[in-house]
Amino acid sequence: MNPIVQCPVCREITDPTETGYECANKHTFDAARQGYVNFLLVQKKNSREPGDNRDMIQSRRRFLDRGPYSKLSDVMKSLPVFSAERSREGHATFSMQAAGKDTTSND
Image 1: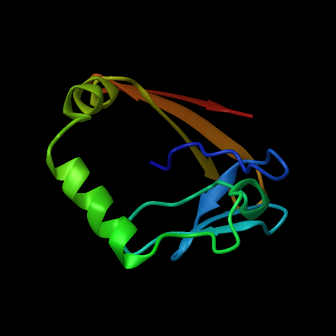
Image 2: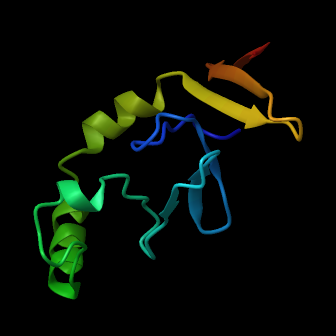
């Protein structure tokens, strides 16, 4: 099941790739070594050097290891998951999974 992620450039649904996500218009978003994908567009980052340096990554890791978002994470894990799969013909199948249930619809 692939989560539905909308391309921030053209609003098309993105599909997972081996290195991140890509939409039908070939806009790509690569996964960081830490496992996240940043969908913030470079021109919106307001920095001459977009991206994180080693100190920023280590600082973020120390902060997250203290668990400030653990309650939020628990709530989000209990919410339904919406996903999309694309056929070879380009048709999308959308589904929702919640509490062991799976509801599927085709476009």
